Length: 250
Image (cartoon, rainbow, N blue to C red; front, side):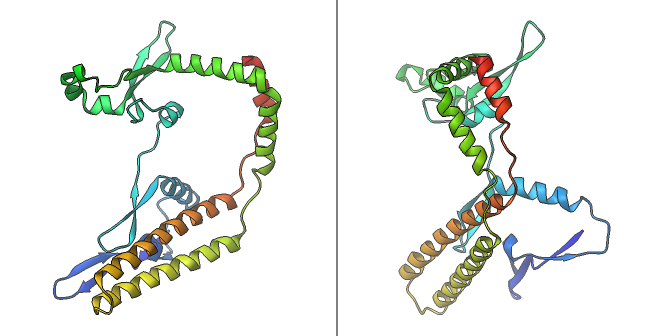
């Protein structure tokens, strides 16, 4: 239910070059029309979108957001091949009891399958490009069972510490200070661009200082996102269910 302004501006009316603004510079005005989606749903989607964004320095010297891929499940999140590439889901096999078993493949093997086949004699391809979900689950269960038997009290103590600190949140003042600092850095970068345009500083000085400012901007934006996440209430751990599940596996 909001209208967005200040999304871009014309830099030069002779060439009509349009400069797009960053989302931080957008101006949102509440409208009197029926919204397409609820504000709560929009906030939820925006939080997910923020988590899946990274920053890169553009031609103008500013840090710009871009989308990054995210793991599809727990195994693609933590599983890496010997070559350094992440595993991806290739497909599913139907088991004898009617269930599904997930197949994972090294991303490099998937992208360069034909090239790797031609260079197999040189030992370049991955030694084990495939992995099955049921084998990973079995190995994980055995590892957890061994660790639980030997370090049960230590694990429970660590979980209690995590549970006790889940409700610790940051203060709104932290976010305000970071926003003010981010605004000051952007203004400093604009001043630097103006100085370079008027040839008040050399190109080397401009590049050196703009790199420092952009690094600070990326750092502050990361801290700001962390501060926003910390201010939201977090779910508590279900200690009884965790202990019961670990005890059953043991």
